[in-house]
Every structure is written in structure tokens, then in C-alpha cells.
Length: 290
Image (cartoon, one colour):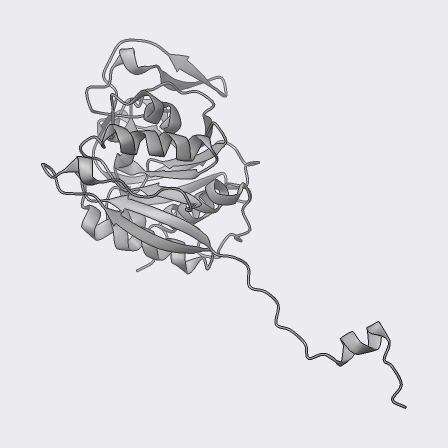
């Protein structure tokens, strides 16, 4: 008679099963219209997400300017984040409604540079991004945020929404060392040649400023600290908004790469597992990757 094995012995005799791989998150990256070189920058935005090992990326390209925007209706549901590298014509009302439902229901949103110029007359979008520029934005669209005695306060003075001075390298100042995206970052670091957005204005609801830069009048700036990296919530959705990244050179700056990668993970999951790389810049020298 063959003796019966105990449950423990039986399990021990089974071949070891490989550990289940963590599920990769799905990112939908939207481009197709922009006053910036989206065809050059989208491959970098896609690659940086894929390099983390955390994301699969699908690129969705809208019709060109003057095309049939009514026919453009991507499926947002099923994606963990939407990355906007888009600044162009309005989407259809049906697509707008789909997008609002997606973010309100918990979808993540990543807004890159000129994407905050988009959709100036779409109220829900402007609440999602907090601050925007250009598109005839003025005080009617909301306040500036100004740093006063260590706090960001609304400034309702009249004026345009959105401008920038000369492109140049500039110091970025950490404003929130406790957020998962910025935890461990240095107090200041040097960013590669880029536009330094200033005079952004909007609803500014639930905005948490993570980093800013001083817009020097010597470079045709405002003489103010300008918010450049921020997060906010919209319904159940998490929004990461970076004003960095005008062109490829700016996107190759390691601080852009790292904050973008971390911001995307946070928008998708509410957490950041990525470690700070050794080549993150300090305040004296730009650090870039090819």
C-alpha cells in the first residue's frame, strides 16, 4: 500500500512556480497637433515611460489641423494614465465628455509643457490642469499663483495668462520635499535650456506646487517665482502637470526625465517606487541623457 503524502509534503514536491510579474500599467499618449515639435518629442515621452519597466504605451495621434475632429474618439477607459503632448483644436463634445468621465472616475492625467495651453474654453479641462497659458486666457480664467512668505497665494490682478522669456538654463527649486514624486530630490537643481513658463493662470483648485523657478527680469521674465511642477486631483483622478519640456534638449535633462517618470507612476498608482538615479543634477551643472 502506497502511503498518502501530507498536504505539506505534496506541496513541497510540486515544481516551483515562477513569481508572477507585476502588471504593467497602460499609458495612452495623445499627440497630433501642437505649436511645438510633437513628432520629435513623442518618441522620448514614450521611451521614458517604457524604460521604467512600469508602463506599456499606446500613441494616439489626432487628425491634423483642419481634419475631422468629430471622428477622433479614443477609448480612454482601460488605460491607467493619459499623457497629453497635445495643443491643438478642440475635441468633439462626445470625446470631451468621455475624457471628463475618465478622469473623474479615477483615470490618471499627465500634462506636458504646452498641453497646458490647450482647450482654453473647456472649463473641466482647466480645472484638471489648475493653471494654463495662452489661448486668450486672462483674469477671467482665474488667478496667478504667487509665492508670498513661503506660501502660494492667488493673485487676481488683470493681465494675460501665459508668457515666457528667453530660453536658458535655470535653477529649479524644490517646494514640497514630502510628496512621493519629489521625495529625496535636492533642494535645487540646474535644468537644461528650456522655456520658463510664467504668468500661468486658471482655476487653481486643489493645486499642490512641487517645484518652481525664478523668472528673472534679466531674461525677460516676471521677477517672480513661477510654479513649474505641480499635482492636483479632479474627482477620483490624479493629475501630474509639468511645465518643463519645450523641445528634445529640455526633455533630455535628467530632472525632466525623472520627475516625468515619477509623476506618471504617481498619477497611475498614487505611489512612487522608483529610486533617485545617481545622475540627477545638482545646482552647478546640467545633467542630460542622449
